Length: 217
Image (cartoon, rainbow, N blue to C red; front, side, top):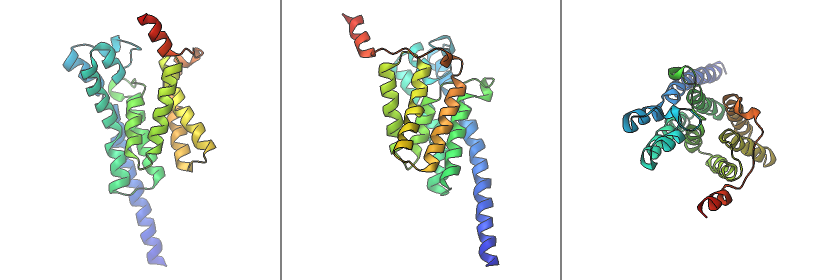
C-alpha cells in the first residue's frame, strides 16, 4: 500500500511539474507576435495601423493580401497547437492540465509580454488549441458559432465573444464534460477581458451577405 501511494504521489507531482513547464512554454509561444513580424518582413508595414489596430492575423489580410494573411493565420494557429498536442498525446496529462496549457497559449497571444501585454483577439490561436485536442467536436462547434456571428454581427469584438459564448451554451445544454465547460468558460473570460472596452458598445446586427450584395449592385 505504501509503495502504491508513493507511486501515485510521484505521478501527480511529475504531471504537475511537467504541466507547469508546458504552461509557461505555451504562454511564451503564444506571446510571439508572428503576425506582426509577417507584416514587417513581407509587407514592410505595421499591421497595427490597420483595422482595429491589434497585431493579429486578420489585420495582415487588411494590410496586405490573401497570401500573407494565410501565412499569418497559419502561424497564429500553430502557436496553439504543438504544446497542447504534446501534453495529451505524448505525455498523457489529465484533461484539466491540458486545458490549462491551452488557455495559457491563448493568454500569451492576447496579452503578450513582447508587446507590453497587448495582443490580438486570439481567435486563430484558440482554433489551434482546439485542433490539438482529441475532442474535435469543440473545434467545429467553435467554428460554427464564429461563422454565424460573422454573418450577423457587425463589430469584430462581439463576433469574437459570440463564439465561446455560443459554445459554452451548447456544452451546458448538451451536458458536455466538466473540463470542456471550464475550458470554454476560461476562453470566454479571456476574450471578455481582452475586448472589454469594445464590448461597452451594444452589438449591431445586420445580415452581411445582403449588405455585400447591395454594395455590388
